[in-house]
Image 1 (cartoon, rainbow over the protein chains, first blue to last red):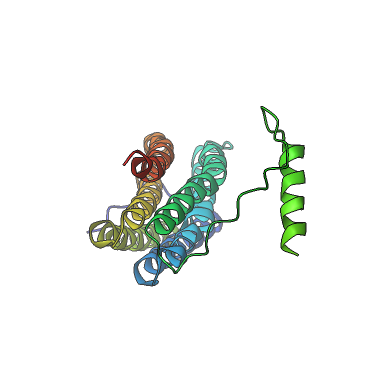
Image 2: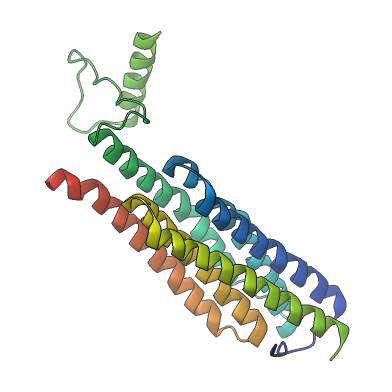
Length: 146
Length: 95
């Protein structure tokens, strides 16, 4: 049976904690359901981000509120996890999508767009390509496609 | 048991059920994912859901110990997913 929650909170704190917990867990469940049900990998890579951003945000705010009221002092550890997740999730998913695209192109899968054309040989690329050079190359490529 | 404690107990239980179900879905995708990138993505989702489950356990027991475990899981999840994505790209280059 259910184990009782450790301490009694006033109702004005218990209500938002409960709502935020349910919202966060529901969002995580929805995102994972999308991971289960969607058709292709490139559709599936979007679904879990629902739980990763908003879901974890709701649960972390609930935890912060709960412990702050419980210990009668502001408890802000959870900001660490929130910042960390916000920073790392796009990086990992971009790496993963890039690896998947590479694998699909290598296998000659026609569901993915072809690789971009290589830059023209006339353009000098410095030994260490700075961002301005890269931006100039991108602009040249765009002008070429038009 | 007061009304607030009752509400909190049941909502924590329901949230844990949701998260357990989400972890089961992700585990299904890890086991039956058609390709390697699906498995890696599902493993990342499994990490995130497990972290949220640990946070709800922390709320249920009222200790901040679970928070440390959640932080460690967040760090390991990032490292493992990025390492596996790198492997998916580089492993075939070496082939």
